[in-house]
Every structure is written in C-alpha cells, then in structure tokens.
Length: 70
Image (cartoon, rainbow, N blue to C red; front, top):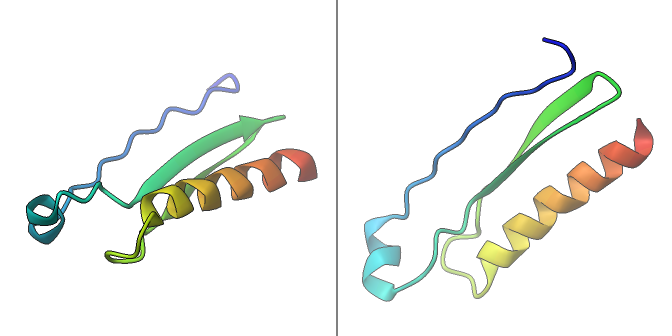
C-alpha cells in the first residue's frame, strides 16, 4: 500500500433534519502517519444546536491526538 490510506464515507441527512433545515450532523476523518492509519467517526447529537460543529471538532481532536502520539 506504500503508506497510502484510501477511505470514503457517506452520511445521509434524515427527513426531520431536512424539514427543519438542519445540516447533517455526522462527521468522519481519516489519517495516516508513519505507516499507522485510522478512521474516526462521530455521530451528531440529534437536533442539538451546532452538533454538526461538535462532531467535526471531536473528529479533529482525535486525529490531532493520534498524530501527536505516533
């Protein structure tokens, strides 16, 4: 694999979120460093205000912690 990590993801905004005009609140990221890689997933918190930002921040925090740990 030569140090490459290929990932993809999909998440569907539910009908209640569509009706309410709320964004998709799920997030995912992948990372690779020094031959170690991973995928981070975070589910939004229902219709809590700004949970889309919270799930993205949670993924970023985990990736940052892993990159510093490796």
